[in-house]
Every structure is written in structure tokens, then in C-alpha cells.
Length: 107
Image 1 (spheres, one colour):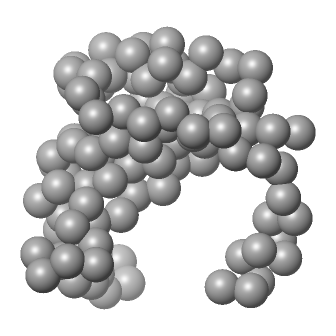
Image 2 (cartoon, one colour; image 1 turned 180 degrees about the vertical axis):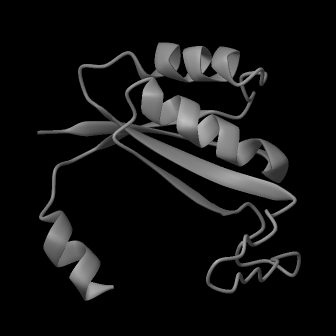
């Protein structure tokens, strides 16, 4: 079964609220990474067990949805729920189904 993803950036202090709202709006998963990953501005953040790591200043989020879902509307709904403006840099992509277990084991 194919999927679709939406990738965008936003301030790190908005990530937790939007992640929860995206999952409630139908996202299958949400990945969060440093928006500056791979550059001189990349930030290493670590959290000890039982503590919370501070968020990155800018985060790149990728939400995965079923192909038949209106992912743009799900994002808009999640943003409304989290009182967050819809990001203006949303990238939409088709994601082919894969053997996800094998793919993650190879990493």
C-alpha cells in the first residue's frame, strides 16, 4: 500500500503539540529532526533517562499518511488544534510501500 508524506519546518517549541495533533488527525507516524542537520548550525541534544531534552530551535517534521487520506487537510486540522499556523514550506511526497522492518534493520 503506498503512502504520502508531508515535510515542513517549524519552531522547536511547537513540535510536541503538533505531533500529538497530527497523530490525532490521522497521521500514521511523525518524525522530528533538527532542521539544520548536516550543517554547521546542527545542534546536538541529549536527554538523560527520565528527563526531557530541550527542543531544537528549528525542527523538520515529516508526517506519514495513508495514500487515500487528505494529508493537507489533516495538517490544517492539526495546526488549528494546536493553535499553530500552517507552515509555508510544506513538501508533499509519494512514499512507496517497502519492507519497513528490513529497511530499519539495515540502518
